[in-house]
Length: 17
Image 1 (cartoon, rainbow, N blue to C red):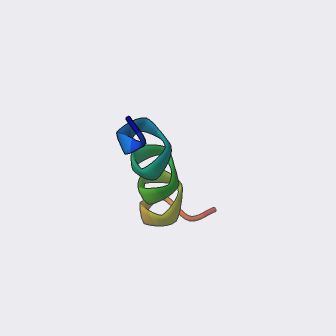
Image 2: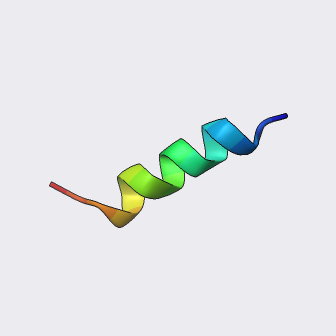
């Protein structure tokens, strides 16, 4: 059930500011 957390981190890493 830690997919959401990892997914969020991945998205944040894929979309740098």
